Amino acid sequence: MKIATFNINGIKARIEALPRWLAAATPDVVCLQEIKSVDESFPREMFEDMGYRVETHGQKGFNGVAILSRLPLEEVVRGLPGDPADEQARWIEATVMGAVPLRICGLYLPNGNPAPGPKYDYKLAWMARMEARVRALLALEEPFLCLGDYNVIPQREDAAKPDAWLEDALFLPQTRAAYRRILNLGMTEAFRARVQGPGHYSFWDYQANAWERNNGIRIDHVLLSPQAADLLRDVQIDREVRAGDKPSDHVPVWVEIAA
Image 1 (cartoon, rainbow, N blue to C red):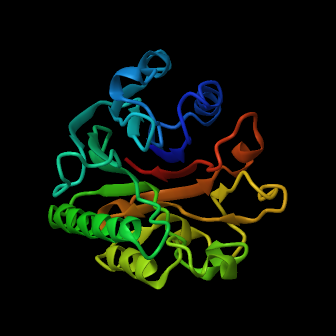
Image 2 (cartoon, rainbow, N blue to C red):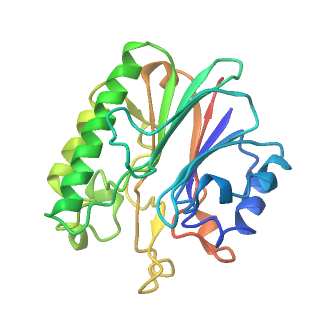
């Protein structure tokens, strides 16, 4: 099973590019972030015509997450447990009914800037709720993945110019510590389980010729439960997508799971 995460930075802007990538990459499951539309406005028919089932957790003009799946989806959950009623649309879960049922958690973790401040406090509180959810899922001892735009630069090697990010919410010590607490519960970060060293990025800003200069950061991650890590076959960053027509500032990251 090929499972991908892709922050598309607005469904309307990627209305042609996204189907082209889906047709070329043929993922079985895709978690999307920043769909920036309410559920009713999401162009679900376009993806259903391509053979995908569509589940969304939308929000007008901001945020929004979705799961596209060629396989049946069950037990869909929208929002993190503990979220207030007016919470931002940043989390969606479903069980993909493949040869091995696999719980998929698609997420768009808050940016948190400017830090310090209320937005950063919100980011850390959201990460604490995510940690609690991961603990609960781990207790079930079943395979699951948490994948999406984490807005976390885990290590210096995950940024082309790490010193430029020292005071940014994506790289502050508290952010990285919160991320490590989730990893240390027993999760495996798929990309670093297979690929080591600098120079691997999933985001390039639209400004200052970041793409042309390869001034990128790696903030899109796939975390695997122990049971899912045992099934990991491959992981890749589709870097070339950033050079396409009307690209997102993110590129897809995908894993292949024996499920």
